[in-house]
Image 1 (cartoon, rainbow, N blue to C red):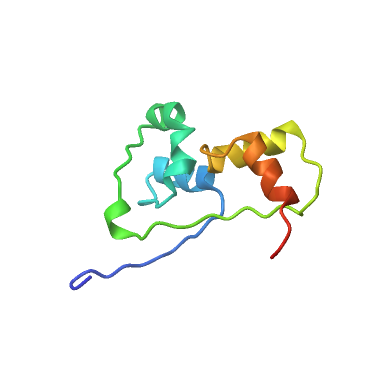
Image 2 (tube, helix red, strand yellow):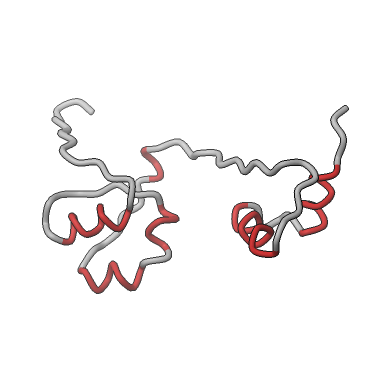
Length: 101
């Protein structure tokens, strides 16, 4: 970005920490949209406002790995379906028993 000096003075792994620093007036924070969607009420309470920056970043691909043949508990299926809502439990089960070709 020509004409801009970007100075990163703090990094944090937890979006709540970043949001707290922004609420304290310590600058601007960049966090993933999925990290802020769940805490929208908290953000409003802190006086924070979100602005999409999706046009500045490429999308990321998230991959989940599960051992073939593993027994999955219900919460594991629920977790997988949060990432891939189009997959049914049967789709996931079928993928776990497929043989390599």
